[in-house]
Length: 344
Image (tube, rainbow, N blue to C red):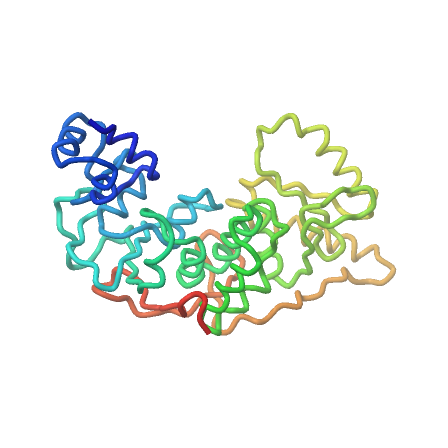
């Protein structure tokens, strides 16, 4: 008798019946494996060894695969806060089920924590059994999410080398023309989520921000703001083995004639107005003692965002809104369709 669980695990934890049959499994073998708890039926004809509450299993139960921020998170991407379950479905998808129960039909209006997206054959042709291709997921992120979230997701993909320069170019070509300016805002040098968010937010406020800059003896300052502030965004408050090197780096930043600021990730995520106040107070203080008489602030040389700006509750900074689109099929998803990747 074949080891059904081992076969499923070798296929990434999710397998269709025909894949198992091709590897020697019989109907009786599959039934016994389910009864014995070795595998679980995620959906009719689908078997998994993943936990039942895993987002990948929930997406397959619905009848599709993870996309958008759900896919980015599943692949280890940077994320702040909670996000709905984004599921990519084929245009002809049928017999949809709820994420939590493969026996309960999904029809009518969907819960707010579930977003369905109907995609064509180009999206269906690549990716894994549970997650769409990263490029397709990132296109969806740009279409669906707030500007800073989309920038951070692409920053992560570039930094982790899961996305190449040519892959980024594909994503940009697949976007509506009015959204392609995002290419000018991403930075492959970015090393963390708080760094990405701080860079984008400060740039939106009109500050000149340089990532991973070298000044004097300071090795790769996370962000240099208006040639006045050297900001290090600490991601792990319990990383004690970095305490002494970080303090020495702060000294080097000060010697380089910059004001050293080291906000924690928590400060960037949850106390952003205070971080902005600290940055702008430091810049103003330097300007008041400068012979030139100004802080050197210049707006970033980046494309302007079309449309009206908006803001996210809890943040006082303004961020661009992406164009709103009609919901499709009972409000379950977004009708914005990217150009097929590799076309145009």
